[in-house]
Length: 494
Image 1 (cartoon, rainbow, N blue to C red):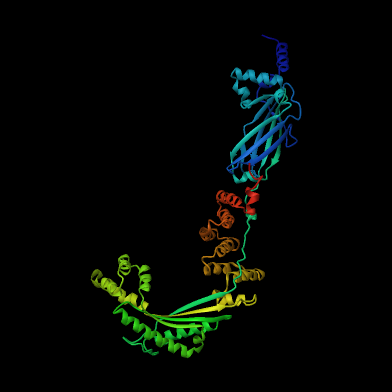
Image 2: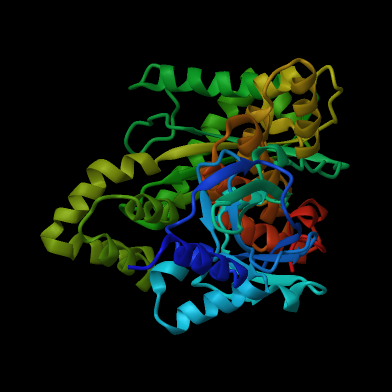
């Protein structure tokens, strides 16, 4: 049996070789410090050019000398601001001269349980003492990374009995530019002023005449009520503030049954009778620059529209007949012969009565309105307002503390081909209504206009699709939108 002096001597030799930490049990953590860290760390964080990855560069400087028997294990991590998410990167190890030899020897002998802490890259301190260590990591980008932080935990392993000393600290706080709710911006474009405004309105009067007659009888059928509706229309039209009547067109239509020439003559007589009646009650109508009555005759175009929106099972065949035959007689004959006259009976009873009407069309010149008049006109005759006047009214709403969304909506409905009206309405839907889907539907019509890209990004961000929002911001930046520069401009990405 060997004496106690033998083991003391063996322990002394092992210690001199820096082997004690390896050949003993796992070392116990004897101290933890949040700061300062043992060495220095320089961190650079950027997103890849396509925005899909986060690139982290970490340079480690050996601020203090590592003793021959010591080892330092560095554990870098990327942690979210609320610390709910994190990514731990592979650790890096550095060992002093004697410790490095001992670890390398144990690995060669397959003593993995004693070297598991050093499974990753192990550097001898002499190699990195002057230049340090540089690490590169790349991970798929997630939103939480933009305002997260880089943490480092150090484990310093010393001599036998010294245990492990831990230091931990934040070495970088990340502040990457990402699109957030507080970055929403809304661009309302002032439309151009117009020199002249025109307003048109129409009314279909469906008075009933006795068969083969153009004598207007107020007491006949439902004529009293229908004439009252017509008079209300004319009274309101002549009372439009700031409007001057320029043209009156009274056009009579007949349903397409019977002889076309007879129907045209009958329509002319009935139109003239109605014109004489109404101009007698409203003589101001004939003071318009243009006053015309027209007997338009059979209304085939009107029939096509009614058939086109109808549930008739053979409507395509019916429309083909109307388009194929050039004369009214041929058309009527072909329709009568269709499915043994069943379709014709439906047309005669349900469609033709809607075609027998007299249409009154008025055209006005409208002056510009004052700021004080705009709310009243919007409430009574918004059709008389220009797009620019509606923009002015939206500013009045804001001054009064009201949402201007209804004003922008009306401008969008009234000027359906106006790109500016669409852009303004979409921005209003986002700012005042938070209606992302509705805004995207409006913007889909002007997708090729670069001014639509930023509000589309806002809409997708509201919907929670930040990746689509960033794609649109990138496109907006390329199209020259300065609002997107901070998020996808120079310095924001690699």
